[in-house]
Image (tube, rainbow, N blue to C red; front, side, top):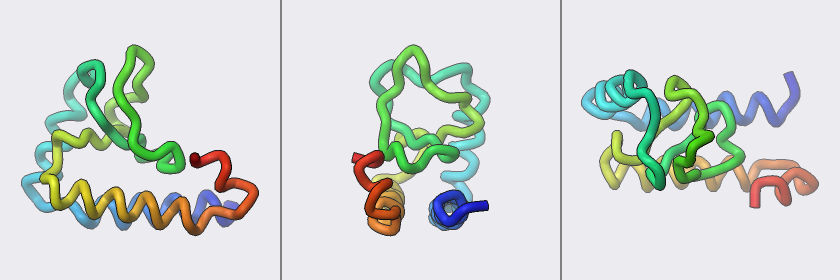
Length: 99
């Protein structure tokens, strides 16, 4: 496992630890949906380097998605701080991929 993959795993775990019990339940309910509505914001937990994305017809599998609507605004801000920290720890050559 390379450092980039290790960093993503650590940040994914940190993000999931930010969720309250009711947010975990909300995310679990969202996973049961077939897809997100067009334009909904989400994070792909397996590709955090892509940052916040908007749902389109080619959204990732729901089991990998953390929809913004499933968490409180304060939690979403904390999650965004974690994603920004991930971008800041990326190797200089890789940073251009995340912008």
